[in-house]
Length: 127
Image 1: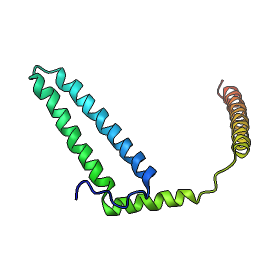
Image 2: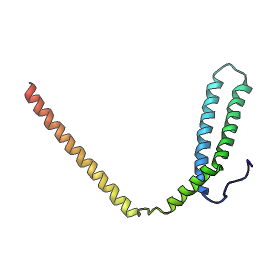
Image 3: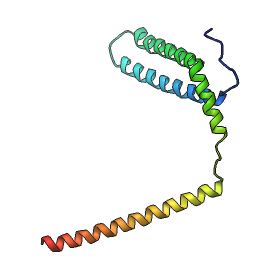
Image 4: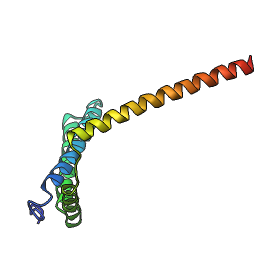
């Protein structure tokens, strides 16, 4: 059945998110196709219906793919694994981000000083 949802309620957010991303990409592609076709001197029906038909066909394909057993089982398993993840607290993320920023600035200063030192040395040796 084309309209039957495989294992409804399981992996709901993963399937919805993936389907929405796929539909957004297809919609953007169809809009770009419409813009390209409307720049030609073709009939308005052709420039409008070609992107619409392609969008509907790809949308149905995405719906079918989200309910295909192998894909749906993978997404259900992926969502189950994400529920097991031990997410860091807000404080841990803030401290880790601060450490990364400090280290990046320190490395930038050290690399800048090294570059300056080598430029002085090579200027002295060359001329």
